[in-house]
Length: 166
Image (cartoon, rainbow, N blue to C red; front, top):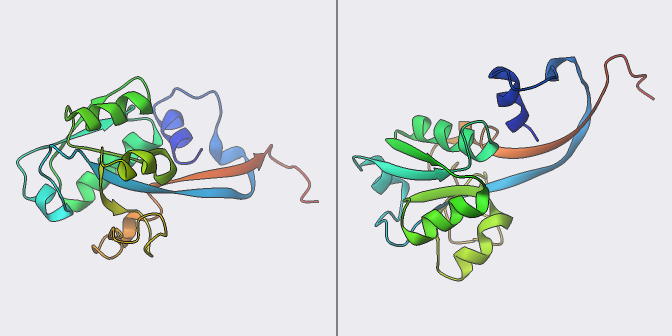
């Protein structure tokens, strides 16, 4: 799980050094979606940028969702206040209840709530519109292409140093 495991290393919570691994490749990259609470009143990035404060539900700052949310807030100029939750289900429920204004997780994790109208998609971290949310703008369309690699989940294969290439 990259970038999530990098954060653990940086803050000293890891017993490994990711720079020492030999990377074989990426198994999958997961697209994230930012979704708003229907009760928040936020329906676009512009609304959030103009708000005094936007409350974001995250699992924690060392998670991929938490780190991505904070970095995206800083890059887009959203004044974020994050609320940590014990897990992603709790964070999503917080946004659905209106305790938080937004949440962002992989599309697969939020699509059921979006389709049920319990969350509103704001943007996807993609350079092209995605089939699941064809009417939702991409972060690239909104002018923040630099977030594409930063707000995503990469599942990679790695091995020990000096492993023969074959």
